[in-house]
Image 1 (cartoon, rainbow, N blue to C red):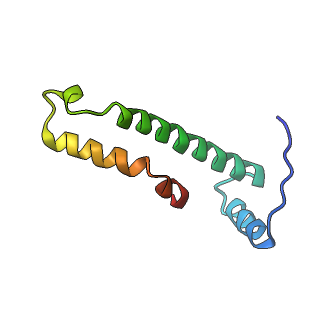
Image 2 (image 1 turned 90 degrees about the vertical axis):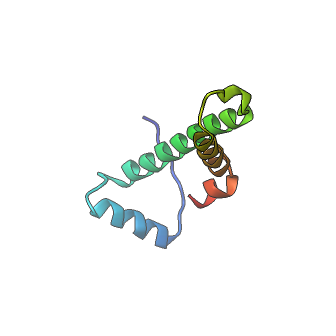
Length: 88
């Protein structure tokens, strides 16, 4: 494993330390790795959603109910909105 040194404000350091003390993480490094993995997962899901949205047409889904099409369209449009990722 390699090392990465970062600078963060005191308030963020205190927050990380609180997360570690909660017992959910074994160290600050474990907490940061968890955050990075979650971000990687969100970005991978957003990429798949964007690819699905780019290929989404009614003709591609012949025989699928209109309700399912509407649900898929809503989900894909919502999840590929960059503002949602930034606030998520």
